[in-house]
Image 1: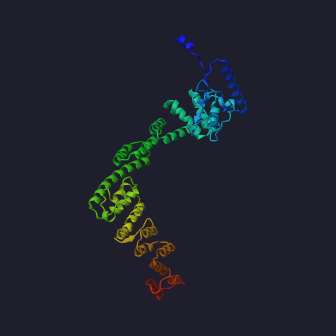
Image 2 (image 1 turned 180 degrees about the vertical axis):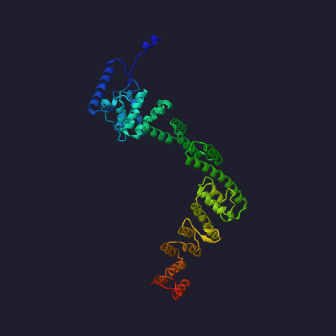
Length: 445
């Protein structure tokens, strides 16, 4: 086989015997021509001049650099380079030696931090000893650059055990705060709990566990989870809040199931007249009280849905209860219930009206719920401040209150002036005329 291969004559792509005189001439000329063009133009260009006739072979090296045109003809590589749609690339300039510096070379801690701040490429992997890593963290903290501090903390989290990292963060308050914030943002609750526990921050751990109820969608399961949080080491105020939250949700579930069934079966007339617009579940305590005053007003205190029971269980203040109940009853235009909210009896059996929230606020809430003038003026006239009473009466068009106030003040001029603002022949005008003609009144002007 070797002897047969030796007998085969080797030829070039042009069909000429390799090593012949003509082959050597063509190779030398081609090399010189290409080298000259590179020196002249600065980038390679393929000569498009016709080469020597190829008589012995249909293959040539130039055919590898040609492609067919749209009409089936071949387009040379030099034509492609000269095409206006193609890009020309300038020769690459030599980069400064500093750019060739390896990322894991001998950068100091300070230089590494500076590169981080300037947004340049850097590597922290060369800092392998605990000492170097802590120096890196301290340098980052010294810059007061949150991004640099967080980047170093992420590196330490990956390269150190959590026990060592937690231990070193205890004496580095700024880095610790950044790390806690980072864990919260990334949602790494388990690791955050371990960190806070190791720091002895029991209340923070308890609050973090309490917040997990927000991720529970099922209301019954959420209630059970809140029950497990009651025994956690909260502060006194937080412990009361968690207890109330559990009790409230437990009660809301009971009320919701009962009212939903009553609305479905049509057992209660109020649900037909005022259909429920939303579920009561997970609503705030004041919203729950309003709901109770709207749909369950007058129920016995022993029922979970009773307004009085809710007020007592959750220690709602008298003012807050009156404001909420007033809004709910006025919404239903239950004026008798509104009157009973502010009517009190003394030990002799005498009744009087008392409003811890102020009668001016009572009148404002009633007006917003479109109370009639007869109801409004009953509470406007109970306002102690005379100027405020007159201002409210004018605002709500309570004419009788204004007339009676000027009469009690024995202010004839103001009474006559107000008469000009009334409709001629109206009952209010006739009332003023009767007062002005009363000879028993001693006017002050």
